[in-house]
Image (tube, rainbow, N blue to C red; front, top):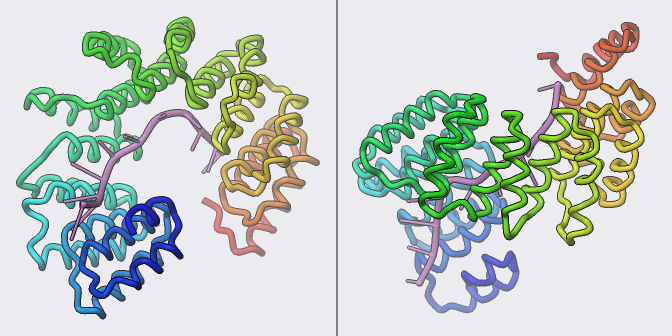
Length: 363
RNA sequence: AAAACCUAUCU
């Protein structure tokens, strides 16, 4: 059941499960974990109901899965209900897995105070519970706070993991602290972690964001294995600093290296084309995006609208905008900013009216 | 026998 569920073959997993004369909490939990890993919250929750109907109670493992599911689905309400249930059963105090899952859930749902409270109340901490807190803070733009927690970790002698280093670098990148990033880089080299892909990629990003493009390129060149993240981090960095030739050299390279593009990579490359002010490159990428069926993906679609609008190519901006499966305040703002910056006051006003008609609240 | 943190990206 675990294998099928992990592979996403849920019909077979359920079938196997149904042939068991007796199911226990593990049989159900592995299935639930599979659903959660594949983002299927409703199915996971319905399993919980079914197992309880069979008279089987969820245990700590089960609750970790459920809490994670609530976080992934941004369902803070339900997460809170589950939290109450967990406390009632006395599971929380000593289980750092459950604690980390709750911190993740609250952070993702924007309940930062609650996340910190869970962290503070935990009897046991480990590097993951710290990392989860730090990651959440950084995701919400509190990089200084995150750095303070990272300092505390160091003071308490908690060894940094790859994830800890990654987030430390990310905090530096967000704050534009090249110096601190370089100090971390030295430590990373000393620990022999520089060839870790996640760390290498984050170093590329740090140096690119702090305008240290020679260093960024150097890290990139020295990586023995590169993935799509390595490429896009560098490309965006070059674009943001106006290095057109390097961008051109990198846009096509992932293909040539047999590295698959994903939706985020298209967003990055579109962003790069936009930074360079190139309508033709943008159109070229747009064609690829359509071929891959990604035009309607919200972030990809919004980026297309934004890029075209910034370029002042409003026929295309409008065309993509109209085709979006759901227009949101983000896509509207992107289009509107373009109108405003290119002096199209009338269109901007019409868009406000359209938002009103569609019940999209301006922010 | 099963569970937590995971790098590039949109206004």
